Length: 381
Ligand SMILES: Cc1ncc(COP(=O)(O)O)c(C=O)c1O
Image 1: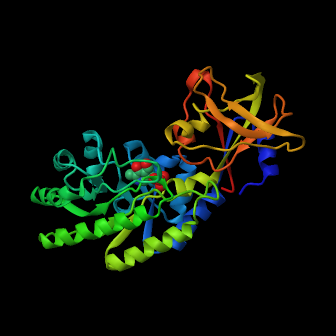
Image 2 (image 1 turned 60 degrees about the vertical axis):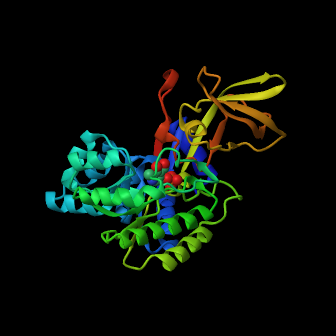
Image 3 (image 1 turned 90 degrees about the horizontal axis):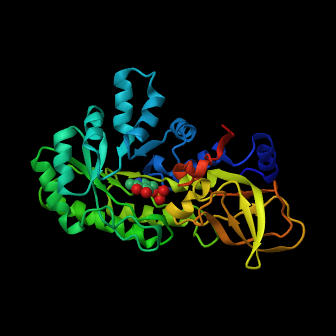
């Protein structure tokens, strides 16, 4: 974790708003994931934070990648641009999953040469893949419970488990290969039971497919959802991993390859934002600070990720009070917090920082109202 003093010095030297990426923390999170889930190959979900340097750090650590657009695919492909063509294609084939169940047909046509793994969850998509990427390896995404997740995904994606076998058999009939199953239990899932139930369901579908004579499935992708330790209410990752490992061992023979698509777990704690106070007012008796970063920028996760971030001050003398903190734009939606306990005596140009803000934050930052996204600085590269 980057020390407060170092953060302060960086902000003084680089200016604000600042978004600091600590690559040691990226490495630590990836290593922790691998240590506790040794059977699982981690495909970093680039959407969580697509910074090219994060992708590079993880590539150097031996990670694979979950991409969901051609631009994300190219972020990885670009790292291999100097490799011989056949080696590059082989690496992409082995280390990429295109995990967006609904794909542009132009994207499929472009990806077909790499024969990548890709998820699907409906009949129309099977026909699209057959037409534009017949060499892809298919992974059927199942709809599973997202109960208790901070971000729910099951209303948008996932085949009804009752339809799973028919979809697998239809893909097979068309000459496509369904290589396995996937699911996503919802992002920031603190309800660990979701994983247990989803693995049980996947094992059932594996058995049913075998009973119907389909035995080409060799992998299970347990998706993302692994929670970042935003506060003490989140149980340790080691506990979740223990439950996942036990269920995998109980239900899936060792020759079934296990994949996962962690995004938030890798990126969240690796980044810290620093902003400065640009204005101060008392409204309806409440102290309000206005800072030069907000929900249209680094704090966009408040809207898109349903995430609440905490702000801390570098100055901690004197009384505190519950304040409102606003972003810099003219929109009334640009509220970072209405209940932040901060020193009462902060002034223009004083700095506030927010930890654990690496996932779904800079990724969704805009240029709204003429304010640029925060400057990105890398430490421990
Ligand atoms: C298909 C897929 N995989 C992985 C992820 C990453 O999830 P998380 O950041 O919760 O690990 C997402 C997030 O939306 C997703 O849609």
